[in-house]
Length: 342
Image 1 (cartoon, helix red, strand yellow):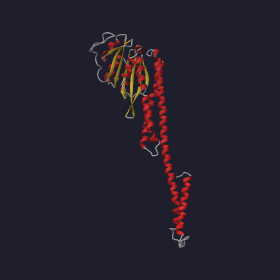
Image 2 (cartoon, helix red, strand yellow):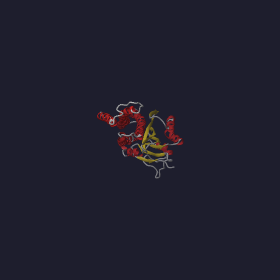
Image 3 (cartoon, rainbow, N blue to C red):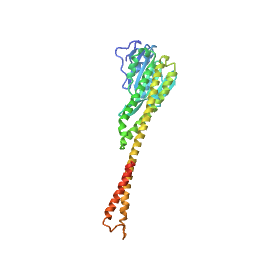
Image 4 (tube, helix red, strand yellow):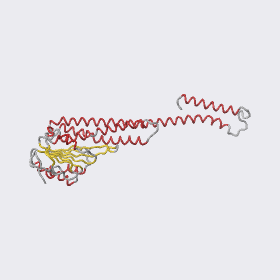
């Protein structure tokens, strides 16, 4: 297995990351320049050189790999246990001279939000990201950081900024897609007929956004700490960058809150319109029932077995009754129509 011979060069054939669980394992010089890929076993050799640091990216590692990472970076047992089992709340914890951060991630999959976790270990000379569940690769964040070696020279904390900024920026498109879908659902929301699938979709969107809110809201506290605290790991030159991420998180939370209110209003409007439509139908049915009640009442008299009925023996009595019933029904219809009941 090859090892690094200087902080500026690596061997001609650097070892590949050990298995699919290791996405990247890269060494950097203190001036921000990329030295090259290294294997997990070579991390300790790299860190023996004072002007280097290492950025490791893992995806759903097993216990053996995490134990190896713990050995290479001397990580705390509790932090490793959390990273192994996942399903942790969003948090930031200090273990000696290192930080352990848990961040919830999200992706839009088939119209629904899939959630995951990223566990981040930050030390003076290392940055380790551990992804679980739904999460995009942080390769774009790494490339962006490598394009600014003067900032990467400030240490692994700039890589932490790049990862957090990447996570937060991927939340806004989810809210934007939900807003566009809500606009498409407006024609169903204001339809005269009730559509159960529309209400169900609105409810699912509201539920997903509530979960997204629970994932995004704690990020404000975490990034606020990175802006104000931990001077041994966060240089003053990077405080402004973390403030920018804080502004993005704040905007995401505001967008989620506004979107949830819009969804709640859409559900209420849809139900109100459905109720209004049902009331209109009941009004029409009641109006027609009133029109039928008049002839029913009059003709029911003639169904009784009386010997002497009004005008029964008159030749014009039958048409007169028909005309009277028609006039009465017409008067009721005119009155209901004028009062906009029908």
